Picture 1 (cartoon, one colour):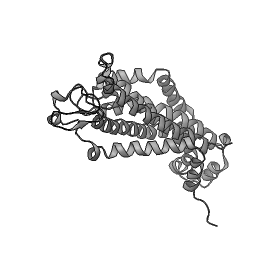
Picture 2 (cartoon, helix red, strand yellow):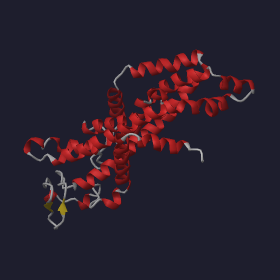
Picture 3 (cartoon, rainbow, N blue to C red):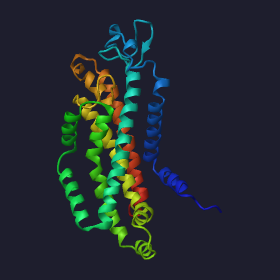
Picture 4 (spheres, rainbow, N blue to C red):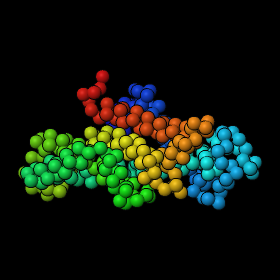
Length: 292
């Protein structure tokens, strides 16, 4: 009988939860739509030449001035909402994944160094982490974006600055436990380099909690980016994310033009919900104490 691989066991664990499978399927579908946005979108919402003011604020299912049908309606600029959502989903997911990956790398390094070497280095790093975590994330991001300005690169920098401390604390907590175990002492006795002990032996055993935190933080980064864009400090109007699309239609809600904000809001809700369902199952899978 062939030995089950870790991926096979992971698939089996996910298959035990219908909610997790539904979340995973929904997440794969949303990411696929985001990646294929240029091929699936009826319109390029970033191309001003394709926008027509005569088609602004059309209700879902109405015909355009050229004869086409806008199945989800249009916004105040004549932008097709379906195209805007697909492209906005692409930006929102991209910003969330990129900022989480960079913050994970930075926080992982500082957390490992803090736990392994201890002493004054641990004290300095943890005091910086404590100070940052004492402030609301959105407040730090607002201050940074007020200085840096708008743009995808700017908001990624702001989100990295907000998130790295979470990973540093998570990795440090796990590494402090692993550092006392026999395999780390054996690696030291073999006179392996400190870099090899930290990144080759200590890091792999700290990954399970880190993976769960990173998955949750992707959803948090997407929600935070949407909030900042809604407030007008995230992405420029020429690169609408889901948050900016919601903001564009907020002033028209009371006039009955609900679709401008409603459909991007549903897309944002589904994305965050799918990621959280996957993260919840990952937590159960990677922590044996949570298994039934």
